[in-house]
Image: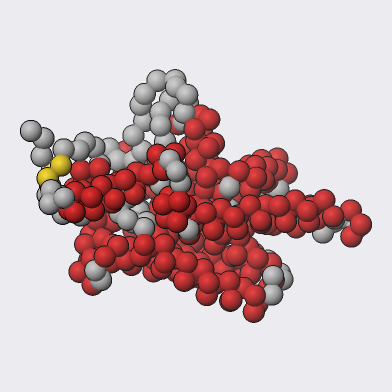
Length: 360
């Protein structure tokens, strides 16, 4: 990918981020955090709301974290690839991931964790261990699911015989155990295994997730197992194992898995560039199909409000839980009603629109 094309795409992508963040009503998850949580996500939502009115205020800090993630991902790609066009292409694919766009435009912990993980990998390769240790402390403080990150660091430290990394990752894991923090494990054998595949397919898009799975497996068998691979593979493996017994919160694992976009493109180039030009056509065709699907998915997310309003039966729309309370609140206000009986997270959404909760 050429430099000029990349920066044009980046500019358009930035416009899309602000458009989606400004026009998308508050989601059930965001509304519950806004009114019930005092963690870093809730604090940033309130701080942003004091700076800007409307939906953009709730999400402005998360957009900034998203832009920081893109910059750090590019720097990391620049170090992984010898060709500049490969770094541009890798970053472009990362930007186009449905999981990246949705995480960037909705308030959530994943988009805060993502730049920290990228910065850790970037700085650790340059042997800035003191700053890397600070990042480990931040991840430990803000994200209970970062226990997976420290497990990956421990495994990588053992494999590469980096005793300092082994020591500190073990200390953080011990702290998780002593404080009884981390990912809650429970339940009984259930049918969430296929569900987690569907969630990952939503983050990557179906075809790209299949290639991601292949790239992880191929590296496991005969590839170079870098720190980046250990983080992504450990998160993927744990999420799949946990899904056998319980429903998995994909935001707990997505930041650690999505960084493997670099490894996917590296695997693709290794498969293509060893072949003569005449035998590369099917790979280029497959790449074109995957890229087209990513672009179509991106457009569907950006213009999801238009598709919702145009559907004859919006109850089948993927964003119905976001828009139903939004239009319901408008309807109630037009009728002079300021109180409504609702359940679950919907009542927090209605509360945000000025409709109080009451059941008589």
